[in-house]
Length: 238
Image (cartoon, rainbow, N blue to C red; front, side, top):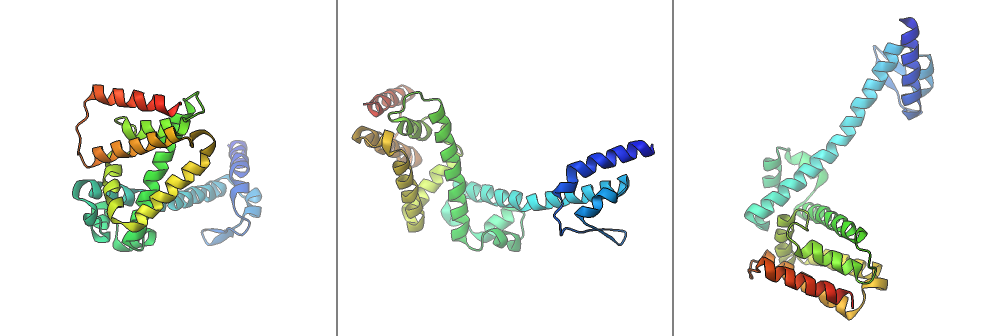
């Protein structure tokens, strides 16, 4: 048994020994341990140290989970009740997070909306990138990906939240500026393949179609939708 304990201790030392910061100290029954002492610890002590490290790791991850939950609740409130309903009190109560916990991540409503905007834009970028990876034609590739994500049903991750944010963009100058920056950044990034007049027309068409869907101003039948999509894809390649 002693041999097995020592073997397990050695494994834990190799796995976790280098992971402890030089100045990191842990307490166990009043004793203080640092990384350079791990080599001399018995198996049970090493195991306790490692369990403490694992617990600390989970505590570090917890704020990220709380932040994500707050953003999900803000998006849901915006979808169900509109932008005015997204208040700090409403979000904290719906998320089951204390007001202080919310303020730790988002000190005001502007920072909360900024966080929601960034989260949605990250999803948009990922969806566009995924579409681009399966498109073999370089010319207009970004434009076709943008069109597909914005126009094809289900193409936009968290599409309902995006619809609500689209409406919010109209009334919030700082959100409009954030969106302008995103558009300008992507245009500059893909200037070599997507700067033609035709590509720009397709992106404007995609924006118009997206807005029409967001405000429910037009009901486009599936067959008509496919025709529009095919025509715009053709235009992006010219």
